[in-house]
Image (cartoon, rainbow, N blue to C red; front, side):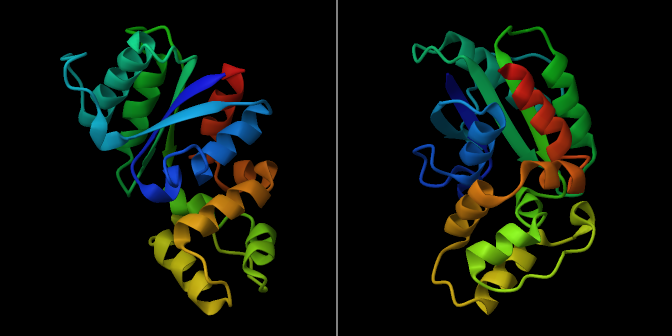
Length: 198
């Protein structure tokens, strides 16, 4: 299966070669071999769609059309954005998920409040990766600054890795059922959409 993987930053996409945290989560959800081509959200193609709609909706549609027309012959599009305290992004992605402008399989997700929060959901996985005792975090989707929380946990550990490397490692270790249970607004619907693509 070949997937166009789109997100906002390096913490999700890693080095761009399909080895980032988001790629690990998607491959585990699909439980199959997947080839990824990654693009940043800011690379949304301008020429393929000039339809009406809010920003994230239009970008999602543009990526769907582009993936369907691509000579890379993508089987699906996976696109994740951060909610960043703007619930309208969820409505836009839900609308794009059901849009029939393109027939390409897709899983569009919104991480509440950001992708970093998903990395905090499974404290046991965090503890293993950081070789430290990480306490259970409070309500994951209500943490105002999840990236700062992740940065603090990393700085307090003895690990000499980047935040991007931490996220990739946690995404390989975390129990998917825990992420689904602790992130019901963001990760749970995204996981359902990814699994439906299989």
